[in-house]
Length: 216
Image (cartoon, rainbow, N blue to C red; front, top):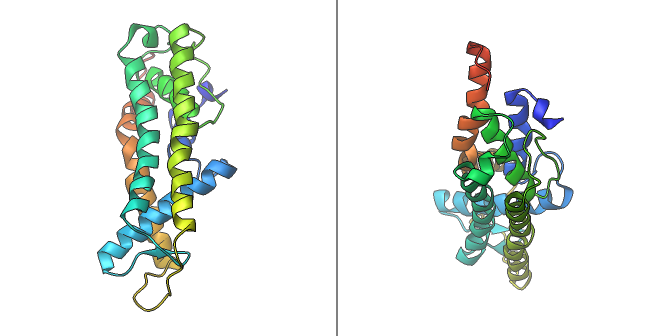
């Protein structure tokens, strides 16, 4: 069913998975994905205004930020790395029933869904081959265990920290200002990581669909 979406219709579930399903769905993964972005926002905002970065009365330090960045890095490499490998390999393009941008979207969605533990697919891609079965399994393994390890380490590190007093020197983590900063961090750190490949896939396909009669 997903393969029948319009180009921009297919872009929406792709983007939701790339952001860690922090908007709709992903009850468990979406929650800790949002907490990762909150920690990054608190740290970046604290650097910009010169205030102590703290969240839930726990000081956010370099180690916490490194774990948060590692979480995002593993997800991005898992999706983009495997998708790029499939795009330049004979076993990868052999499974395509559509060429051009839509074919890229099919491959990208397969590994996005595997890393994001989403469970859906663009049915136009034939993945029942030894290489696809292996690489998708590895992507799923990385998306679950290699991403949850830094989250657990971050939780353990925050749990053992002593609470710090909140005063005028602490950056406020509520209100409209923090909400705008959080959305900005999600878009800059999360969405822009995947914008180039989304531009080459569903966005290009959208312009082809609306400006010509080319069929791939």
